[in-house]
Image 1: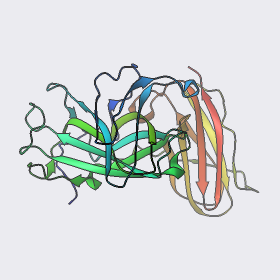
Image 2: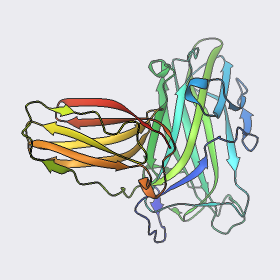
Image 3: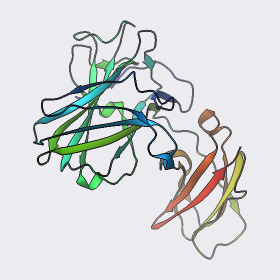
Image 4: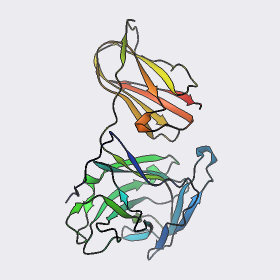
Length: 306
């Protein structure tokens, strides 16, 4: 049974409610618990300086079977700090499975508990909803993956509420489970940027069609680059079709979709204004813009220097 959402109105076209981005370097408000086979623990660390950010680092080890519950951790919000979600919410979380992990397969169970009366989650009165992510040895590559799942796809755990998510998040529980592996199986995972975003899309820009007749499909280099706060991206397509141009940060996380829709043959230009993106300014740094149309894909690097 899917979760039913019952949220009030939300005026913004898009919004993000951050649950924890670990940027303060403090993970002391996360609590760890171990399973029968292994214990776990962790904290916000900065041992990946190339990524330039803190994150939650944790790991478990022990004999692996398909029934093993390895351990987990949770964060509970104070009664006056429950998170009221934006309209049509989706959970987003970045996950990296570290090199050195020896597991064959495992799952990450993410459970969200609600609070309907401002006094914390109560079994028998409030709802819980869960989403399960599956990982294998193929995912052990030190690459951040941005998971984005609508709450409507979470499973109702039937903990005694009315079966409806009423908008306030009290707690998030993350469990490592369904572990398959040999003796001394080890799992090391990083978590970052846990947030809830509105599923309502941000406004899509309109591209300006230029007079030039294209001879090739092409994504040109943005100008200016470096830029502050606007830059123009020019592209060409040889046949009518859908065009998507999106902005990504250095972790591969999508920041903004500039274009997404049908275009006629031609050369176009579209502007990215980083000062008003999704209602707030984007921080300085390295970004990438990618164009996809038909079988054509091209990506370029760009620098926002404030």
